[in-house]
Amino acid sequence: MTYRSDPPKLLEESILELEDYLAMQRAVSEETRYRIVAQLLREGETSAKELAEALDVPSNKLHYHLDKLVDVGVVANRVENERGADGLYSYYVATSLGEAVMEHGIGELIRTEWDAHDRYA
Image (tube, rainbow, N blue to C red; front, side, top):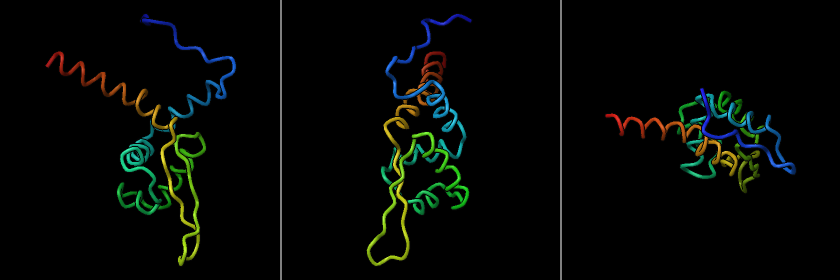
């Protein structure tokens, strides 16, 4: 197999290492995590409870996956103590890195498949 161009090289002053980029791609390659990031990109900042309901994912499983996404920088977490409520509430949002991974990683692969389908159908 030959490539049309050399793989991109990291900038010398890059704040991320290649492993960081690969970790982001691996994180969103798991189906539940992919669905979480896609939902956040559609809806914007969302509470954990709203995410669990929208995706029909049990809370404990959701938090496991959210923690993975936050750890690699694909999702950000904002914790807030709401007035008149007991305890803290977590809100999640896809980061610009998360958007880029979805758009230029998996999203690009899906668009390529659609292009091929449209061309040869």
